Image (cartoon, rainbow over all chains, first blue to last red; front, side, top):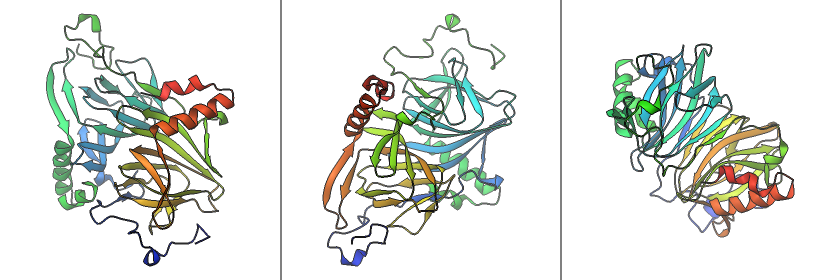
Amino acid sequence: MTDTAAPLDHSRMPYQLPFPPEAAAEIIVPGALPEDERVWVPQAPNVWFRPLCLNTVSGYWVNLLRVRKSGVLSRHRHPGPVHGFVLRGRWHYLEHDWVAEEGSYVFEPPGETHTLVVPEDVPEMITLFHITSCMIYVDPWGKQTAYEDVFSKIAMCRAHYESNGLGGDYLDRFIR
Amino acid sequence: MTDTAAPLDHSRMPYQLPFPPEAAAEIIVPGALPEDERVWVPQAPNVWFRPLCLNTVSGYWVNLLRVRKSGVLSRHRHPGPVHGFVLRGRWHYLEHDWVAEEGSYVFEPPGETHTLVVPEDVPEMITLFHITSCMIYVDPWGKQTAYEDVFSKIAMCRAHYESNGLGGDYLDRFIR
């Protein structure tokens, strides 16, 4: 085994590789920015998301958020950490004075409350978000109005895919 | 407060917004694909990474991995989950038959052992990786040869930034 670019011959290996039998299955999503409009789940006016990983065991989800035509994601609080990477467009939070541009990375700590706004001159914004725990929607005074967690996300996606012909089972590939 | 696009007047709010005093600080990295070559930390021949979030409290890190000219990231095992999103180029694992193309998302479950290869016809590959726990480098038979965790990553980055003029303190903005 001197050429690391050659496939390994697993049958020759005394150590069980590459997977322990209990390991979860991988998720591979080629072309995660899809042309098939059906995978985008409506979230609010001009706001959609598409699931990539819905982790029911650790309680988090990874998705792409898409906003068109001056959309707003209602004010909410995060009890867990959030990681974002802007793939297209630009957005900001009403509560902060910085702007997330294309190619920017953002870490939002637990305890953040914010309102995501995409300005009118941005035709399309797409950001990869990794969200742990839940989102607690609040009014301007911080009073809870609703929540979302990985299970409510699953229910939203499943209902949407059942209604648009993809089928509820389409979602299973993203759930662990 | 009828116009959600207008900044909120926090002084009028009875509920403490937007941050609890104990909340960690955000991390904002505009232009995470930088032109300043100094932020890229050498990892192996033709392989570099740049840190975005080094979480010492939960034990994970988020970084960009960059590979040029047919680079290989040595065989390693992940005891924790990994999330990847390909921003440029293309790569595959010797242990799998799928290819991660630009715009692809990948979830790698705990228990994965793999060897990342960028083929010769790809001039540059950049992938966003979110890695929990550690990487255990192994030989082809699965025997441990080395490891990396968030603390060894911090040490690598700090030493590199100290040596190239950015200064070791430059790293602090990415550490929580």
